[in-house]
Image (cartoon, rainbow, N blue to C red; front, side):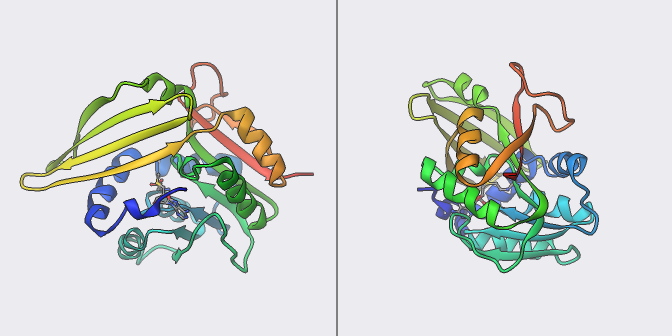
Length: 246
Ligand SMILES: C[S@@+](CC[C@H](N)C(=O)[O-])C[C@H]1O[C@@H](n2cnc3c(N)ncnc32)[C@H](O)[C@@H]1O
């Protein structure tokens, strides 16, 4: 089960700082726009968090409905999106039923991998299919699984500066057999220390093609970078475009 509660009130400020640094935001929106126009179009952003991608998609002219299960994350998003066309909706992306269909559905920055079990991923893809307007496209923005496998079974940590006042140490360990990666984030300020974690279960392209078919979708394009380079052995990203099955 994915656990949206990890982004609770105590962690959400630190999570927002980290996602402002790690989430591609504008690069994600530019990649989506290279495949589908965004100006004046409707976008459903599933697992929006504190809205790094939702705001970038709205900056590109889209009308965005942003869904997340974490209320504290949505509260931060609401404060940030006062002058943006973004509606924040609390919900579980594995069984969401909105009355509208959208030109574009996005799952940015490994959000797809937060649906842990294969059944959960298929349920999530069914939600995507249910909310796609005719001719619409969905965008899964994933780190290439080979990057996770490189992390190996031994924990390794990297520390980055986070703005002028914080540092974040990211410790990762991966379990190749379970296709899982655990990331622990330790955000340090002058007098604050906040920890939160994220557990993701990756899927390969072959698995995603199969799960998409089960959910009534098909993979119509895979890019290896936000600039649209072809997906291949050296790609660090696995950026997948899905459309309704014909
Ligand atoms: C990796 S974060 C990505 C956030 C955002 N898309 C970004 O690019 O910064 C994944 C988000 O998915 C949300 N999430 C996890 N499980 C969920 C579920 N079952 N339903 C809705 N949201 C969920 C988490 O609360 C978190 O905000």
